[in-house]
Length: 107
Image (cartoon, rainbow, N blue to C red; front, side, top):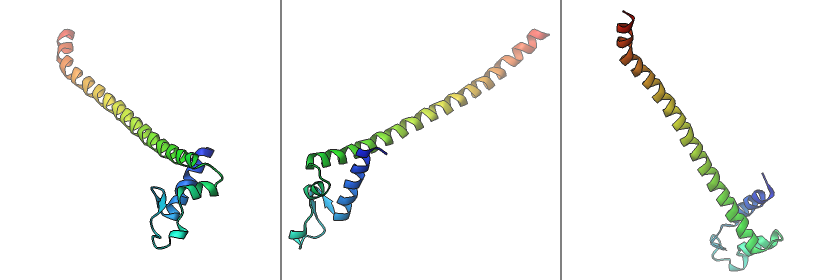
């Protein structure tokens, strides 16, 4: 796992723990002085808020790409399986069609 993915995971986990969504802590509405924001998390990690958001976005995009890659592999494997099945069926049908002709030619 590369560094940017680790940092992205760490940011996402901290936001989950603090209940941050859309930039603010939504779970502790009565305690406004204790609210944590994405900026607070970025400061705790010694980085800019923009970098924090970009790393989080990068992690999400990487997960989306991984999911799409798996879908493409599954489709490719299905195509291979279907083409193999089709070749078996064609071979079987060709034998059924040409067997009588071949037997006539041998006589």
